[in-house]
Image (cartoon, rainbow, N blue to C red; front, side):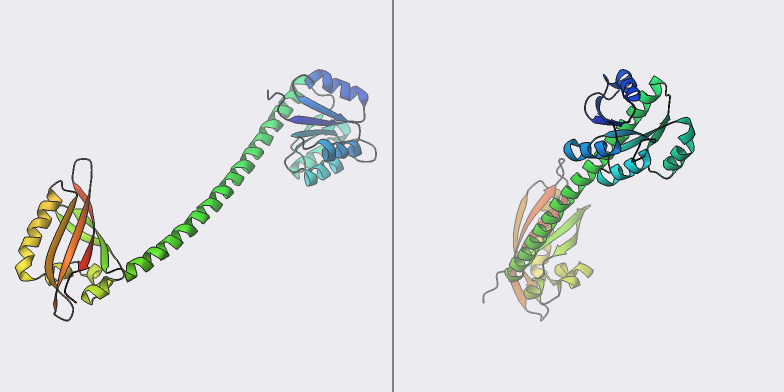
Length: 277
């Protein structure tokens, strides 16, 4: 049983029915009573919303279907239940199939029937409220995420500008069984050797082949020791041939990202042209 967390509005113009409802469920739910459709709508405006509305079909001036339809328009989350006499069952079934009511109860009802109907209606109300809350929280999270994405996009643009005008070329490479494979080279690579950065991504051997023969063996040895060892950083200086065949002196600074066992996972570093200008 749900308890006194949400209110249930009962609408019936017969005092004996109202008194019967009080005796059956008045102590188990937060019950509010109205004697007509107009009074029920006035209560909705003044002290709503309600979790559940239970309305008799046969009432003067405004029948139960008309009232529940107006209630749905004004308070779409309120769960509607209709009370019907024996002769109104066809009307109630039609309203149920059309989705205008959640459930109908036939007069006279068993006490357990009313309690189950209210319990199920409140469960449905909680489900709708939870879904609405989750949708709202998801929308708020998406707005916050969109703001972060816009912020990151702006930071990425600034970073690209900084890198583009920086003399240092940034790069990263994956390590696998002692070998490396470039995964990123910054846009300003063309200013270093005259090649486009796509050239070195497509042909990873381009850099190694451009190293001066007198420096190549020493660089390979130190790179191998660095990757296989446990050092976090390495700095190298050597000559490398640009696209025009001119050798430049570069400074290569590396940092190695390792797993807890010390195995090299990734290299991040920079190349800086140290040739005299």
